[in-house]
Image (tube, rainbow, N blue to C red; front, side):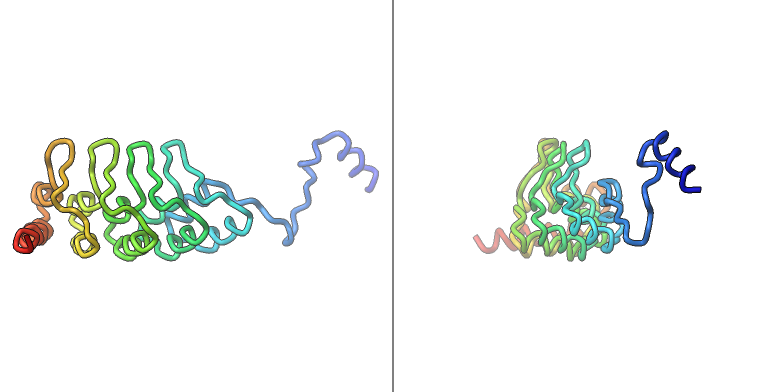
Length: 193
């Protein structure tokens, strides 16, 4: 029996006989990290980090794991990635940042706070339409995120390339509670002047 194994080992690539045991460690792939970041699989992220995964590795659209985690409000993973050196203001091919992704998410409030606390630039604009995180939150009707961004100093007067503001995005999308909030915030700013 041993001679058959030796003959086969000589004829076939060594990989065909690679031992698989409970001690074997499979390297976590970039795709697995992206999916884990998106769906909150902290165990996979932890394993990838222990294996030395570069948290700033980006997909072809220059999206990083932090962007995927922020988009789905995966706060534990956002914390892990920030602690592991993720670039807070990384931009994808359109200039969208993790903060912009988090601001547009229904469950993004905690991720927005984490990113701001880590130094995310609150008024950064993308390089496509010049949207801000506040505009993203308003357009998606994310009232809690809008309120948080305003509280932290987001500039509600900024306009995109078409002249639209966060308030006009909210109104056009039918997010009237968000539009009222932004309108009141603008009045409050005028009163302070």
